[in-house]
Image 1 (tube, helix red, strand yellow):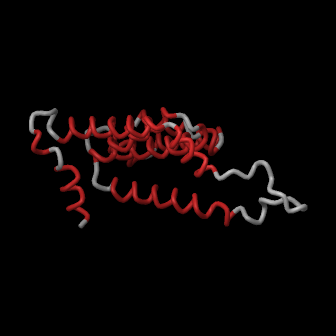
Image 2 (tube, one colour):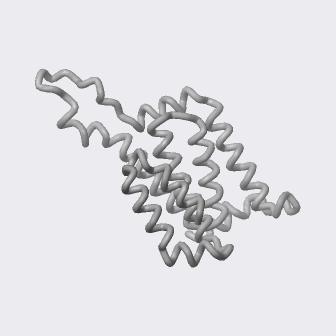
Image 3 (cartoon, one colour):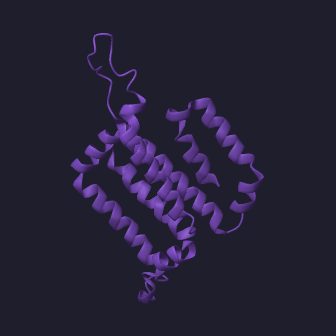
Length: 178
């Protein structure tokens, strides 16, 4: 629960200082979040991991720093190891990012040219810019994937005591939805 407040505070540049403060107070006094965060159920871990993934996506789109990719991978594995719902959440995030990358030009198409018909200097697709930045940082994705897989293997093999369970998280998680 405390980590959620810190993650909400990281949303300040995107939603404003006052909105972040209001959101943090609402999470602080939320009866559902308070109830689930006082026990070791999966709900609070899934929520924290999902919010960490969301914050990491926003900050990587803004700064293109590799640390946000690593934190996003960490958030994804925390959410994934906590709840099967992460399959759907990751699909929704990915679908939105793909649609936003391709529809950006269409959405801003009316305002991207000045009166002379020349393209304005500030017309940059943030998602395509982030993808090209990520392509330039070749080892960032490898490191994030290794971080995800390292934590995944440790958690799903019962701290490496049952290596035969390594694929159980993927198989049983997908079986849950199919």
